Length: 386
Length: 201
Image (cartoon, rainbow over all chains, first blue to last red; front, side, top):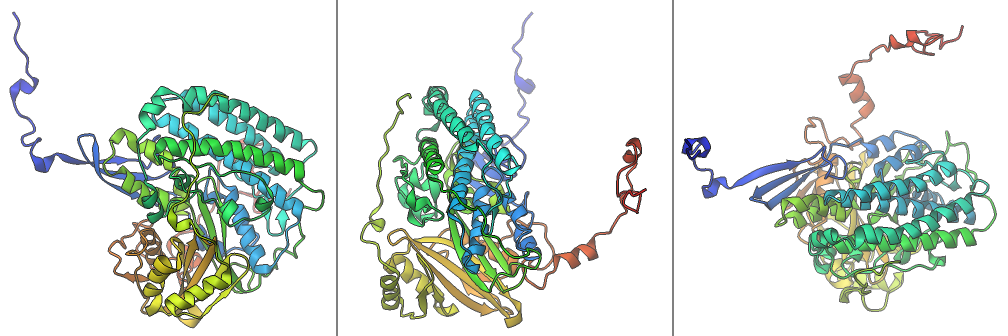
C-alpha cells in the first residue's frame, strides 16, 4: 500500500517564512574561510542568492604595528614592517627604508637600487602567482592553485638563497641592502624566469582560457572607470579599468625610470580583466628582472650607517610611494630627531580595495561570486589591520 | 604561447590628459584657486604647505575640482602632545601632473574636531574612521565613525602619545614564570628556562 508522503505531514513548520519581511537573512563569510583572503569577514544581507548589502569586518589580524614602531629603534622596525602584507612584503621594506633615506638624505649605491628592483619584481611575481591560485580556488579550478603556488615556491627558493628568508626577507636596510648577490645567483634567477615564462603559456590553457573561468569571471564585479577613480582604486584594479597609472612610471623610485617596460591595461574592469592585467604584469616583471640582471653595475650594496643602536634620524617627514602587486603603497614617516620614528603611517593598497570598493561591488552580486570578487580585487586584509 | 582572449586598450580619462605642470605652475594654480600661498616644493614631485583647519574643506574642494588633484592618497595623523595639537596631513595626488601635494593642518588636541571631506572623496571615509578610532579625532559630518579594527577596545584611543602600551601591559597582564616540564626530556635541559644561570654548568 502506498501513500503520498508530504514534508512534515503537510504542516507549515515555519509560518511566515515567505512573508516579505522574512525574506532577508544575514550570512557571514569568514574570518576563517577558504574563500576569504586572510583573516577578514564579510557580513552579507542576502535575499535568495543575491547580496543586498555587504559590510566588511576587519581587525582579526591587528598587531598594532604603527604603535609598536614608535617604541622601537629605526633599525628594529625593519624586521616587522614586512609582516604588514604577507604575500607581498618587500614594498613595505623598501618604503620604510626609503622614507628614512628621504628624511636623512642618505644615498643608496646604484647596485643596491638594482637589487631592490630585482627583489620587488620577484615579490610581485610571487604575489600574483599566489593570487591566481586563490582566484582559481574560488571557482572550483583546483589544479591552478597547485601549479601556481608550487611555481611561486621557485621564486621563494631564490629569496631564501638571497636573503635567508622565504616569505619575510628583512633585506632592505636604510642605505642599501643587507648583502650582495651570491655567486651564480643571476643564472639561477634567469632559469626561474625562463621557467615561469614557459609556464604562463600552460596557465593560459589551464586557466586563463578555461571556459569555466570565462563563464564565471567575465562581467562579474564590474568597476567602471569613473567609479574606480572616485572610490580610490589603484594598481591593477585601476589599470583593468583602462587607466594606465603606475607608481613605477609616474612617481619613479630606485631605478625604474631607467628600465624599459610597459603598463598593461584592460578595458572591461571585471574580475577577468583584473586577472588578465596581473597575468600580463608577470610578463613585464620578467622583462624587468632580465634587464636588471643585465645592467646591474658592480659596486657596494650598502652605504654604511652609524651604530644602529644610537642612530638618530634628523627631524623631518616624508611621504614615499611604491607600486605593490596590489596597488599604491605609501608610508608617511615623521622623525623628531630621536632614535625612534615619531610616527609611521602605513597606507596599504587594500584600504580602498578591501573595504569600500569590495562592499560596493558585492552589493547586487550573487553569493557564489563574493569570494571571487574579493580575490579579483586582490585585497590583502593584513594591510587594512596593520 | 596561446593567444589571449582579449586585447588591451591603453587609455586615460580626460582628467589625466593635458600637459603636466611643474611644481611652480602647481603652486601658482593653488594660489590662484585657493588663495593659499603657504606651499613650497619639497624634492621631486612633492609640494607641501600649511592650511588652516577651517579652510581645509574649501581648499580640498578646490584642489579636486579646479587644481586637478583627483586622487586622495591618504590622510595621516600625528599627535604633537607637547604642543597640544594634532597634525592632519592630507596627501593629494594629481594624475595629470604626477605630483603629490601634502596639506598640513594643525588642530587643537583637546577639542580634536575637524570637518569631514567624505563628501568630496569617498576613500576619506576609511582614513577618517581610522584616525577617529586611533586618535579620537571627531570628523564633523562623517556619519560612519564606528569602530572598525578595535571593536572590543574600552581604553583611550591607542595611538595617542599619552597612551603607553608598555604601562598598559604592566597594569593589565601578569608576569608568569616560565617553567616548562618538557625540557626534562632533553639531555642537559632547556637552556635558560629553569636554570637561572642560563644553562651554564
